[in-house]
Image (cartoon, rainbow, N blue to C red):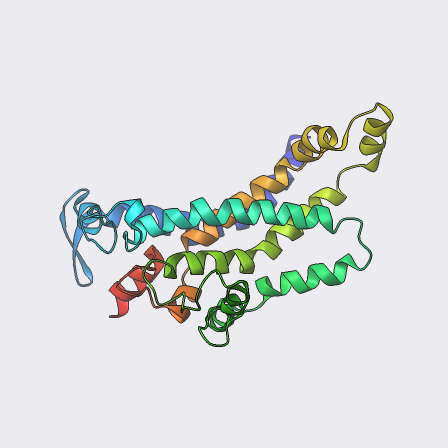
Length: 264
């Protein structure tokens, strides 16, 4: 019996070894190496948190001379934080709304596929599309705003005040399809009998949503939020293609700064 109970764990050994070699060891070694001064390829003296203080002392990473109300550039670290604060809630809410709206619609699979296409295309291509969307002459955004007469056409990705937020909202368009798909799968997993029983008991649509749908979608919500945060923290492609972190560092992020530090 004991040998039989150990068999499943034996099958986990190869996976655990690979995780240890390619994930755990590099992570631990990177943290360890970051505490030393590096001289090219060799490790120098122990300097503790010196490397971290050096990085945080750069204005392109953390600009403490400007407040949030003054707008970008605020430093790559602050820009990443703004991405998380704006991108994650919007993608989560929009994904849930789309999943709910398309749940009982005929031909919903076609509509979902169209929405999800933004997630399927390479991010470099997505960045090129964003350049056209925000173009001052032929862009969809300027065409819509120009029709209202409220805002004059402008190149949104070139101005320091709007470049970062234009990219953030563009990333919402690219990532919402993922959130919608996860929520759609979560809604399919909820037994319809629960809704029928709640209606028989006289529960309103709002109560059904808040007391049945939302709690049972908790696993889906956790997945969406975690994956969205991870994606935002490593966002690079669309920024590199559209603005290269400009103008004047107004749209730079940590991943782009690491790339510039390594290759420029």
